[in-house]
Image (cartoon, rainbow over all chains, first blue to last red; front, side):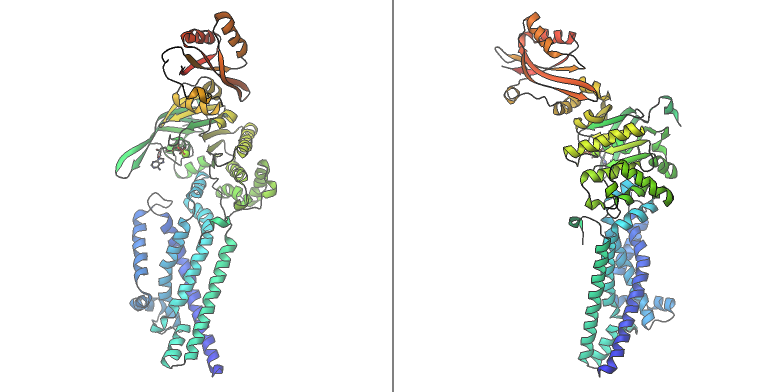
Length: 224
Length: 353
Ligand SMILES: Nc1ncnc2c1ncn2[C@@H]1O[C@H](COP(=O)(O)OP(=O)(O)OP(=O)(O)O)[C@@H](O)[C@H]1O
Ligand SMILES: [Mg+2]
């Protein structure tokens, strides 16, 4: 029996990794700049644009307050427009990314806000442009925090990816539901859970390792 | 635009005023009517109590703060009116060091010193030797690859100084750069600043709340109180003839001359009933010998002088001393007049019964 299940489990794991990786990369590609903007655009800050900041903040909050399973269903037309279909693993990447962007944006925003304002002042005094301050001061200084934030986001994406079976997305979560629950094969359910635990552990330790490697602050200042 | 070159000043504050808008309240007037000329190549210190407006004044020199009235001219340019690229260009000609160093934790010593050059868009081939030079200049060759977290406070401030010098500024601003350092480290950092001033002809404008820092390196100073400049001039003159009460109170802390406790506790602003002594501070500048003067006071006028405390210090190359004495109250005026005639400065501190 395991001989039949191993390829299934392997395929499902790869599908999960595929969804998480692509939505993680896309979520970062949009979430990072959005987070940087949110962190620097309040009144009087580097990119001072209070109105845009407010509006984006509202959109981010709204997106984050929708439970993921409802988001998946609610944006089906958008998913179809973007992926050509609203069903399947690739289509599932759309809601995952939509959920990841505001989540990552907030985490990045927090990490950037932790940067000592004295550093911004020093960079201004050097004649840096706002863009230079972001690129050469804020992002490098916030990197340990951003790395931890992205780790958290990836772990959450692994969890979310288990829900996309609802729209025909495959992967570990879907396998667990279909075989473990509907066909009552508890050993499949157990295998799925074990693989998920291992994945999360892996992501967490790699993420923390990276965060530690880029953190040059004195140990007592290391924030979590 | 370059009008203050006629006067030769490095920095000119011209009737500068700054008010901060407050949410739901009257605006805070941080500075009013501040006029000050900073000599090129000099080390000028600004002293004042917390909240007096020192930082606000200093931060106008590189446009971190804009005046709400008056003008700030640096190298002939009106900083308050400069914007965008022009302001950034002025900022490259003005280095700044900070109380808490403000070094990037993510960059090594080398990387921190290189930052202003990267920002100025210099090519890597130029940055490398320049940064190596600067690091050597502040004596940190061995630590170039360390991160700030691995440095002491004094070493961090040296990195701050090297970084501030990177773009070859004409002016260096220092906002309490030694306030977070112990006295010994403070001395080494001040000496480094003095060396840089001498070797590079850099104009230094520094803020402190310690008179000792001014005594040690500032050739010129200004005292700021409640947002106004209450006294300004050569440090020596102000130490010897302080005019404003704030200056005097700062001075009493640094001259190291304080009344012995048994006198201080009994000191009254007016003579008490019965026989009493007038307590006088005598300040002498240059090489005036006081001892013969006090001896003559006794010999010629027959006034007995009790010496309570005294010390001689140096401001730059000039010795200057403070002496606390007491004489019989009835003869105080006479004694003071005699001393003043011989170029000593006197001040009545009070009376003891
Ligand atoms: N951004 C600001 N908004 C409102 N008020 C401010 C602001 N910056 C300074 N002030 C006020 O202006 C006054 C002068 O402040 P400033 O920081 O220049 O004082 P300081 O002499 O440098 O004091 P310290 O020795 O404590 O550093 C203070 O009353 C302060 O509260
Ligand atoms: Mg200050």
